[in-house]
Image (cartoon, rainbow, N blue to C red; front, side, top):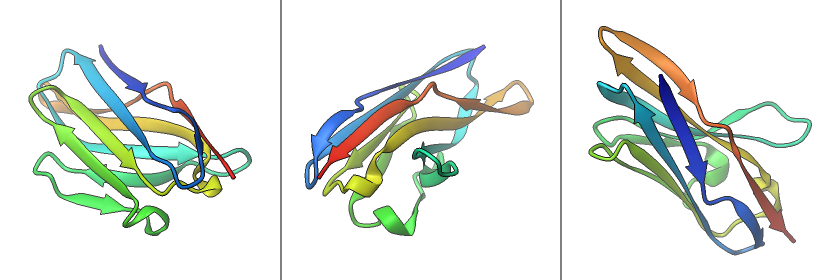
Length: 119
């Protein structure tokens, strides 16, 4: 079994910064793409940022230039540095990872961490 545990959410004023972290543990052979999603009340879950095992990144247009995704392959962790936060960034943020176990790839999710940006 694989677990993803997020940390780092909280309450911050608009213009401030937060750093989210996610650690994967369990029977992991390797982790391919790692992603951060978010879901605001009444809205669909959306992809915020993605990073491949090679370090290639992709961002939602709404966060480009403000958020930075990074990972440590040796520690099976992924982080999201969020700067210049806006009230629209308020959401529950979820870590997602595609994990290789044996010859198969499985999709895992964290429990989510709340980010609230006050204006």
